[in-house]
Image (cartoon, rainbow, N blue to C red; front, side, top):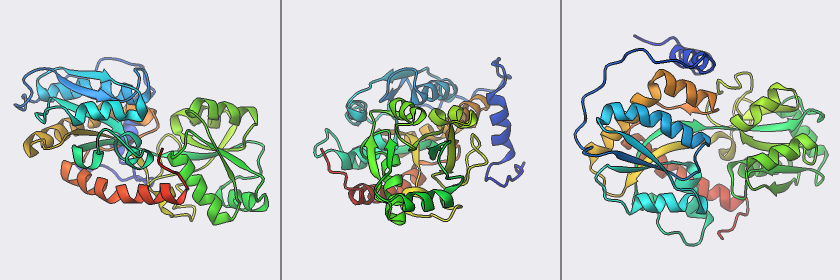
Length: 339
């Protein structure tokens, strides 16, 4: 059955999942379990480069439960935080390519680290096998409620009129937030100053305290403050609006299609180099099945991400190869030097 189209790019199934995200938790309806796919002869390990309890970890555990139905084996989430994701990535890169170990990481931990560090223990572009994206990770531009900017056009005029006087915050050097705001500053000729925070929490705290007026971060961190009227969301990155903030346009919609504003990060699964093609396809099928489940869709949307439930290793590999040099150019243009 064809799903009903929605003007924001979301079909009926995704919108129903958003409603389900706010419903009381309860047992899922009975569903048939697929037969084991064959390669999994013991518990499968998903390595997550972040501590337990974060959004990536929560999604890994939700999807792991559903993927276990397809594998016929339990899926163990193994948290290996530290070194900007390099510890977890190296563990997977050096694992046997038998499909028993995979990495659930982000664009930064699986791609842009290549450009942020002079020396890394592995090259994600050559030593990992792209398997499947599970969701996109848009970020939002916000301003404090006392600024004159009601929309992105107002914002550009405002920062232009305040040339050299404004600062903006992001969750770290080389972050997507820095790259996007650098682009906006250059387009407007605003000469804004970047304040790099060690994570989103201190950035949001300074936004709420009035130390900075402009910031970019995840929808999960910002939405409650936008809903409370303390922050105003002006635009989101990526190709389409997101259901968590459906009234907020994309940068492209608002007339700013530059790469740093239209590109979007992701959460994805990768395996070691030389993983057999049939095993890679089974991982993708299991992940797509998990994302498309009622709870998978609901939790991903509630966390501020955009579900991807139709990816393949081939599609993801092409996108990975296409996006890598774009991120590299953006980091170079922003003056980010490898450390």
